[in-house]
Amino acid sequence: MTQTEPDPTGTVPVVGYAYPWDVIGDPTFVDRARALGVSKVALAAAYHTTRAATPLHPEHRIVEARSAALYRPVRIEAWNGARLVPAAADWVRENGAALADPFGEAAGIISGAGIEVAAWIVLTHSSRLGQDHPKLAVRNCFDEPYPYALCARHDDVRRYAETLAAEAVRGTPASTVILEACGQLGFAHGGHHEKTDGAYDAATQQLLSICCCDGCRADWAARGLDAEATVAALRAATGGDEMPTATLATILASRHDAADQLRHGVIAAVREVSPDVDIALHAQPDPWATGANPGLTPTAPDDVDVVIAACWPTTEASVETGRRLADTVAGRAVAAAYVTVLPPTGDDAFAAHLDSLVGAGIGELHLYHLGLAGPDRQHLLAEATRTPQRRVG
Image 1 (cartoon, rainbow, N blue to C red):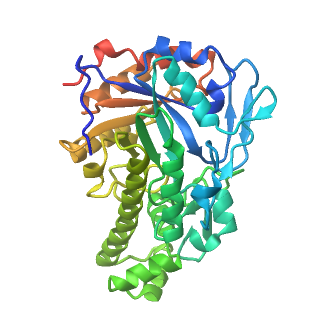
Image 2 (cartoon, rainbow, N blue to C red):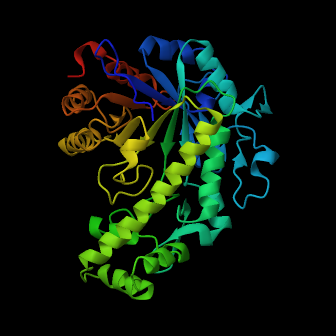
């Protein structure tokens, strides 16, 4: 790992997030990014299903990304023999024709304008692949699969993630790789017409986020647990029974081991094609966290340059998350906060929230989102890059 150097001016760098379709076909995108003063643009190179607004684009207002996809060419030679293969993003179009390399084209436009590019890569979140291969998906203690969540315990999933990451950056000007969903996804998911919100408390959601697939059960058994008895205990715990502390500790150690194996393989694959690229990791300081920002494992900060925690709500709880992250990664990686200008973020709290995060030890801000923010949100984007009053130390 090459530790990211602090900004010599002492100001906090800001990374702005975007999709390839935000850049392609909009000649004003790079001018807006340059005027904002973002340090680099994090551009989606592999992403999950989404329906995205494009309020500033001159040619469209909505993009439907029908499935998780690689926004690079899906090369036969790279994926030959793989059980899991990503879809191509044929919905990214220019002059009516699908683009073979949407990320490559958009990255070239951004870097050609003198702005650094980060390859934003979502690894284990693919509803299409989870539906096609349910045995490789996360399964809860009631044997119910979460098709949007590929389980990192499986060799096929790790091979998919490694190849996905390497292909995302191969031959591109990306100076940084940003890894999202690099570990365990769980119960929570913003699916179509979601009807689970508020049904279970946080403790039950944590239990329902524990993967009980065949691979995870086998690993528990190798660690000394009776897998069937553990699953039965988890089911009972969702109804109010207590789980043994030692059992939960073993389950967490198993989950973190799978995440570590995934991360190590992905980083090695990226380094093989781009040896000097920096590595940033989306993760939460809560070791039990699941989702796009899974729980930080004890060794993860030693492997990467930046760790990014989601701090979207403009609340003291988010500031505490940032503080906890900064304390956890101190001396090993830069602590970054993922913040958003989208509702419910408002004028009355955003600036103070950013200042509080920096005061808590955050050394980099990751800003969501350069393409989704409409005209009424542009002033908040500018607020995030108002660095003279946000200095490290």
